[in-house]
Amino acid sequence: MTQRRGVTVAAFPVSMRYRLRTNREVVAVTHVVVVGAGYAGVMAANRIAAKGNSDIHVTVVNARPEFVERIRLHEHATGGAVAWRPLSELLHPSVRLRVATAETIGARSVRLDDGAVIDFDYLLYAVGSMAAPGPVGCEHAWSIADFDTAEALRAELRRLPAGARVVVVGGGLTGIESSAEIAYRYPALTVELVSDTVAGWLPEASRANIARRLADIGVVLRTGLRVNGIRANEVVTDAGPLFSDCTVWAGSFAVPDLARRSGLPVAADGRLRTDETLVCVDHPRIVGIGDAVAPPRDVGDHLRMSCQAAIPLGAHGADTVLALIRGAEPAPISIGMGGQGISLGRRDGFIQVSRLDDTPVRIAFSGRAAAVLKERVCRYTLFELRHPRLHRWLRGPAVAADAVGAPV
Image (cartoon, rainbow, N blue to C red; front, top):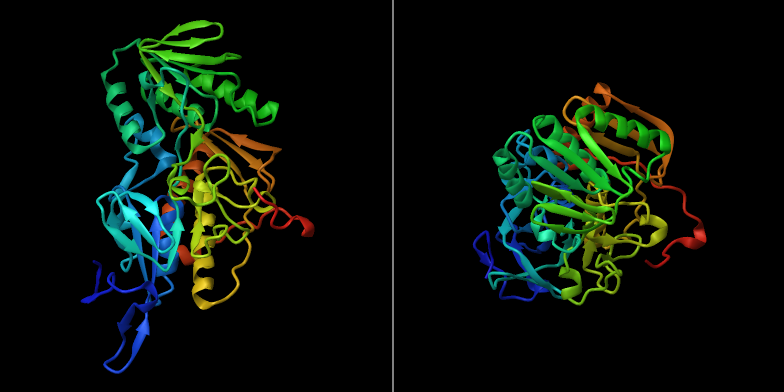
């Protein structure tokens, strides 16, 4: 049972939930449930709550009572920052937090891992992402994909003696920032970054700049290698084994299987399929936001898993829910990307400017100014979450009229 202001509501059908506004007037209450409290989930919950409509109740379901700043997990792992804060400090005062894990999502209810069931009128699916399965033996590697693994790596790095070898596997943003941060915080360690390429999606000049700056901070680059497996004290590559006292897996990301497990429509990679307004295909009361959503390619194919995309997706998802509550037609998403900020320790960084469709241009800058800008962007994300109605975002790239609604 759920208690709201002294009224038991869980025993009634969703459409029969009411709240006493005065002694003479009874009004319907709309219950919105947000599953997940990452960047997208917190933005959506706060944006709906900030409307100040007392007839809309918002409940956030999250596995832990803390908000994790995923963009700072590489700092947390090296002891340079604490990448969490209580959700009570970020969520709007009217938002209710339910600490639990969603097991399955039904047509109008969510079943939790403690056996409880929460009914909803609308649900925002914001379960985020996690580390994708790695090569054989990945259990011998540490990770920075979530708070618990970053916390475990933090303890491990502190135990390593001077001269120990740390091998980071993966040449994407996580691998670049993690190897740089470890080398910066632990100059007595030998840090190696192993990958086929490093920052391979960027222009050649940008890749060369990043490689030079990684080398300057003490990171040994081993490129052109394919990792086939990980053992207790070595990384197995196609060129032979590399000794490692501490291996960090910084590969790609995947999404939880909650949508698939619940029988909801998903793309091949498990992301929730939605239309161009973020409403779930064939489930008009479920709205998808953040890393785990797959809108049509023409409006969402350029939106990579990132904080940069998650926050506006959360804001737009909230606006979609508010439109549905009003009986209005939701607007299609139009979100543009602006570039990528890469931290290279605390005193160096790299900023790559991109087109709205996230393809890089020739404009980039680096050094101390880039590090300061990246830090300010990280801090500003929390301001946006606390002031959700102020959030504005770039419009997405132009879409051909006959392409709107193309399936995933």
